[in-house]
Length: 202
Image (cartoon, rainbow, N blue to C red):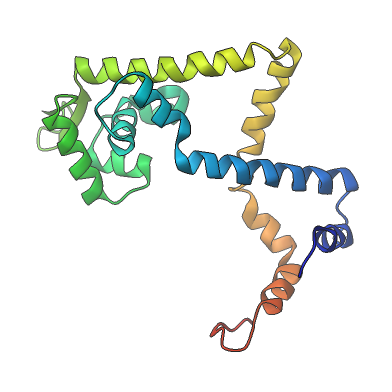
């Protein structure tokens, strides 16, 4: 069985510094724990329960996608909202997005209107109820986050966000890493070709 020491040796052989290797392993452990907690949507469920909301997480995500806050979606938040945009923002298929939007329209949280740019196109807007719900959920989340970060020193806060934003770009840069380590990746692929696996490499 592969041990962490074996992976450490592999990275060492590629020229990675010891501090980089230690960081990779620690960050990966944090990310795996974070992923498991994010998959459970702990904070979202806590917000729904604490605020006494009668919607589920998928419906809440739909409202947040329509709200399209600039700090989350950037320039996308200035565009007209359509079902297609909701699907893109939530990474779901358009038919599911359409069903979710219809549910929120039926509950009174979303309105369908004709686009000002093209009257043939339907755009989505939050009602006052929808905005109130989004405001309450975000306020709940930010209250908890601000309470946590209030224990951090100013210099820690000033360093953390830029570094986190820089780190968040690593997935989009992964193609170059795959190219640089094509030989090692090919060897790893061969190492898991067991009899009957049905997958061929090379």
